[in-house]
Image (cartoon, rainbow, N blue to C red; front, side, top):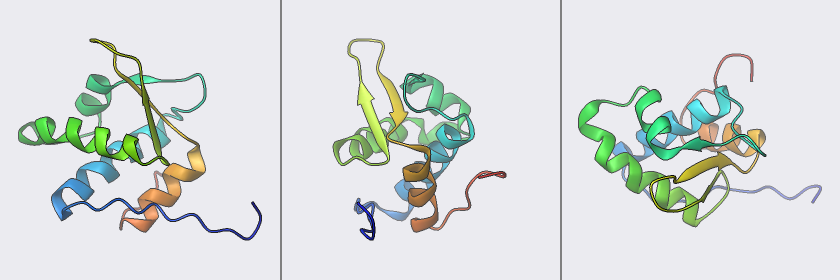
Length: 105
């Protein structure tokens, strides 16, 4: 799709947007795409989120996964997994939502 710009339009409140950027940044930094996946709890615990926001973080991940890119969610039960649709989708999402991509990307 040359010449087609993809916008990651997910309507979120500012606080949720900050949570989303932090979690997507974690996934980009750790190159979580393709066969590489992370459990939702791992992403929430290792993204540098404040402890009071972790309940909202799961909802934010689920909302992002409803409208990929940048996140795909799969699995069920206690092993819910997430991954990026691509590293570039993650970087684009971060930049479009006011964040800076991790160093080196």
